[in-house]
Image 1 (spheres, rainbow, N blue to C red):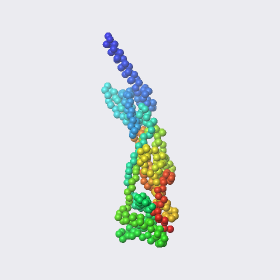
Image 2: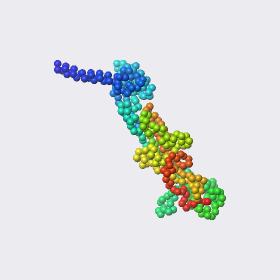
Image 3: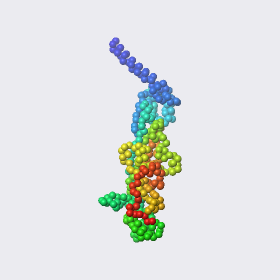
Image 4: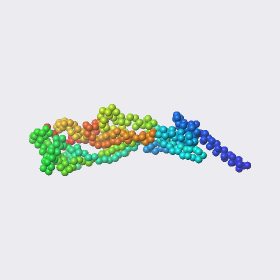
Length: 363
């Protein structure tokens, strides 16, 4: 009698637990299932098994939901799931039951996708470019440097480049001729003295070009920003009209040229992590031509060391997850050929003149 009583007592909680679980998790009558609040979701008499969710920094959250029921109910739910761009697979179980396993591209249990901070990662890739020899210039020591180990980059005016190229036409017999100035007329004795500082650099450029050196390799970097966010997260930085962070749509239509931004503005607008920030190359300006006296070049021309902002790439990782890939390319860009978004004060001038210090023009 005692043993029978104990057996009955132990069996009662098991039956109550099964009944409670079944009643709680039946289809549209389950208050814990968010699907019940979605209009048109055909849950019928399906039984929802305990859910499982996961989270990864690169793809954010996901949820696995398993329903068990009749073939009719499983088929109805499968069609609804497919029309909502969710993935699933189904199984046939014993006793004419069927099971459907649905993978949701968000965390249904914690709703963390719409609450977590936007995930951003940065990559820096070095690159090599080839700069025209005249544009790259010649590195020579400062005339005033006592140790002769401090160098600056110099080039020659446009008219001097023409002189060098004219001499190249004659091959081994070519010689530099600085008797004529920019206007084509002969230089006076005083102007010959003024031009003298250019002859050393011009001679170096001439010999380099004569031996086949037409360009110089230079190091640049490609900076990539990758962000992942939920389309339902309206507070995400990238959920707003993205390109207007740098260039408004109207300005973009007018210029159709990607903007150049400084290192300072890149940090201010896009907030890279501390390690990436330390590895960013600096912004600066180098004059290439000066219209003011005494040089009197045709125009002022500057090369700005900054970051070319590429149009962002928008990719859907899932129906609810978006990945934004943004590229920034650091190089020396001619100010006249690009839209400079950042103020010129963000590009400190490295050299007051692209020419040797003791060259004072020829006019």
